[in-house]
Image (cartoon, rainbow, N blue to C red; front, side, top):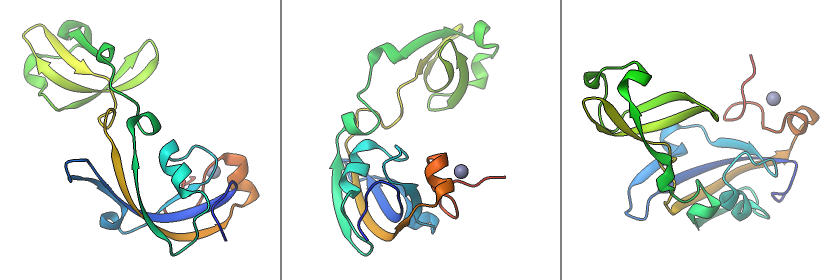
Length: 163
Ligand code: ZN
């Protein structure tokens, strides 16, 4: 069975940066990742590379930022006043991730620099601007259930868990 729209796919992957640093690995977590093909569950470049593959196949693909988490935008680096955030300088450290409410909804930002009265934050996705190098092994391909196609995601271990 080949990967196409309305198939649920379980796969193992290791994601490395161009510098050879492992960023994420399903193998380390144990469970393969599961997704519904054709439903934008995974980044576009990886989904494209999955099409037509079958269980047991292994492959490598390099996904450019445009087909992954986007290019970095300098406009997403912003200076916020600590007063407005309601925090003190000693509560923040570079590298910390904050969840903020913005005019465009909730956003995750990374703290770059902390001053006495302000903090510089980066709202770019941490993986924006990076090539993503995937080492993929397709574990299972099956037909999606009506529930899964209706919901737009895979159910079960490694997929979406409902309460
Ligand atoms: Zn569901």
